[in-house]
Amino acid sequence: MLKISAVSYLNTIPFIHGLKQSELINTIDLQLDYPSICADKLINGTVDLALVPVVVIPKLRHPYIISDYCIGANGAVDTVCLYSDVPIDKIESIGLDYQSRTSVALLKVLLKEYWQLNPELKKSDVGFEDNIKGKHAALVIGDRAFTLNTKHKFIYDLSAIWKEMTDLPFVFAAWVSNTKLSQDFINAFNKALEKGLGNIDKALALERESYPNCENPEDYLNNKISYSLDAEKQKGMELFLRKIS
Image (cartoon, one colour):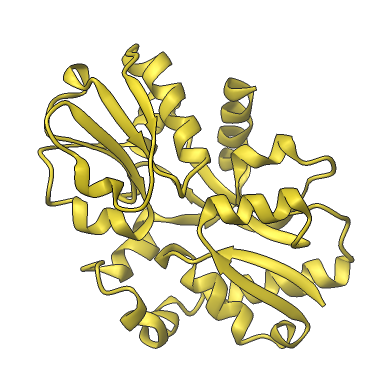
């Protein structure tokens, strides 16, 4: 049985719905985790396939991007943001989301190349997002960001800033295997994801109670998250991976 780790955020609901409604669900062990755990599981070989932060790809001995779909954004994404009570140039320290790898790396790129700033970067633990005050800011990703988007005076959407800096979309996570999978499985997997993306309203109707903090999940999934791993996203991903290499 193929072991698969997927992100447990609102933005993966279409993927999870598509897999659950497909015949594949009877042949896979589907595990839901936050992004850095997905990464650890694939690196450690405890799963065969995962929706992983793209920053992990160079760390894998034999990475295979097996899907036409990803978690990406072509501009503002709303759920990968730097939150602060002071302007960016007044920030002295930033708490880094323990659930993130790609977004932490993206923040470091933007601090260096876009803002040209060097605040202290601090590791975080559960509840760190409640300690944003004064000149201490925090990078927060995923569903917890929904409750912060009306809470702090200064919000810097990293995907929007990447777009402004590079004129390219950003890829946060891709479906990657650490072994070569059969083409039949890959075809069935992509078909399941495609079906889920074609039934976002149905997926939300079934799962809405699990994600109460997003006021307009339809808008978020249809207009903020961009799922196709197209040529422009591949260019954006390749540029990002070069910048962090």
